[in-house]
Amino acid sequence: MTRHRWRALALLLTLVLAVIAAGCGGGDDEEEGQGGGGGGTTTTAQKVSGSVSVMGIWVGEEQQSFQAVVQGFKTEQPDVTVKYNPVGDNLPTVLSTAVQGGNPPDVAAIAQPGLMTQFVDQKKVKPLTFAKARATANFGPSVVETGTVDGTFYGLMWKANNKSTVWYNVKSFKDAGVEPSETWDDFTSAADTIKSSGLPAYSIAGADGWTLTDLFENIYLRTAGPQKYDQLSKHEIKWTDQSVKDALTEMGKVLSDGDNIAGGTSGALQTDFPTSVSNVLSPTPKAAMVLEGDFVPGVVKTTLKPVTGYNQFEFPSINDSKPAVVAGGNLIIIFRDTPAVRAFVDYMISPDSAEIWVKRGGFASPNKRVPASSYPDPLLRATSRAMAQAQDFRFDLSDLQPSSFGATVGQGLWKLFQDFLKNPSNVDGIATQMEAAAAKAYK
Image (cartoon, one colour):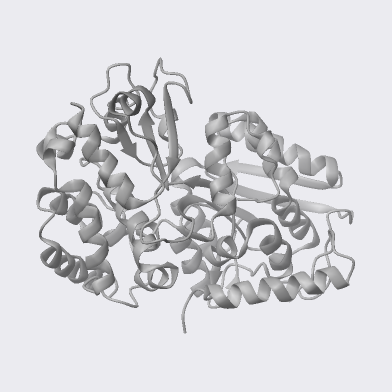
């Protein structure tokens, strides 16, 4: 049995539920609950009482923004007490310990779907079946699929980072006479033109292997499609599959020309992510563009102004692929199913919850109901709308893998993609090594 619902079935379910909702008058009513605490309905207008404990990664300024979201919920549900426990990057360890000790929070906001799946396998986390119809309507079926295990909805991706963006130096593009590209062929052609103007097209953070996995994932989703992406994310197909080799071949079109990379291949292998960004977002750039997520502008200080000094465009389509987004983010999961918890989840599904943080800045939501005008930053507004409108939306593939294979410095995918950067022509060899590492991690 697959661990994620196929997109076709999700789309069919969306249509059926939409018809049902319309027949019942539409609006805010939720479908009959079928998970956790049993039946019943929940609406944003229904007043409840009780308490909700929330564990999350957000600290500092982000904690203040989340507390503002909580206050918005309190305005709607004044008889519910919410206690937030900020644990930062230690959340996986702290949360796992709490779960194993029999004292989990009511709600957690996690960044790793793999951790959610672990809790599902342990039968510790409760399903969000009661909220699925409204989540699908507000976020879209692809976002719901991201939090679905064995056909059951467990995790709502409430906060997201769009990793399918290309950031560029506006003056460098103007000097080369090129425009942002919508197709992969135009993109690689524009890169050659930029090089001819005297500036390398690409700034690549090869010292940080995760940036290379992001590049591969964007290419793979567009060349292989979402179904293959899902299969590869669970090792249901091998890394020696032809679809992987095809994506590596396309990736090689970016990596193979060392003269078109800031510092050349050897320089890229010594370039960390912040440096790769400063190479581009500078009045005297060392490269014209960096292929990374919507968090790029927040990585370094720059005197360039957004839109006029630096800008972004969506990762280009490959072979007429549909609009697609690879994303990272935070999923809302629950360990107890109570009326107060349901009301909190219902509120988080509403655009109101996201809009509070959106207006404070530094937040992107895949919720399609959040007005674009709510974003104070025009570039974040654009990248957020791209997430909401993507026909194919998938979580970062390396974060779906066992961490020893997908997210560990010096080994697994991070190390092997660095090896591929050194020798982009070795497609068959690197695919074989990736499969060997994957097979070991999945034992």
